[in-house]
Length: 93
Image (cartoon, rainbow, N blue to C red; front, top):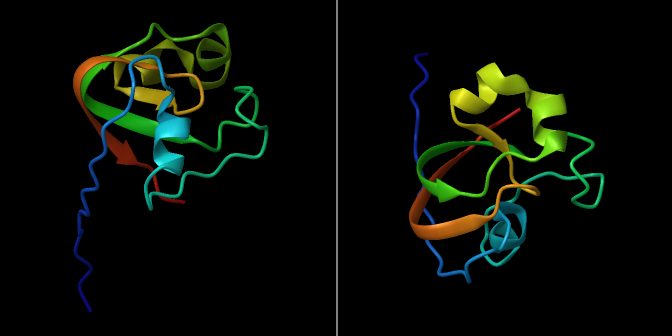
């Protein structure tokens, strides 16, 4: 049996400055988080494919490291939507 990738796209409008984690709660997209959005657990890690977000927080720098951030990885609880359209990949387990 071969495995294939399936992409589901869910789109919502959010106010600027809202974190990706809060935005996800308005959709059926389930992002894990166990630290209440404090940037400590790393469970809400996503990969940003395009769009403008806030600068990485010190929590993101500590948990993800610069190399991963440069590849687009962010913590959804820390990354705030700035403008335009943002495309985010939810990282599976």
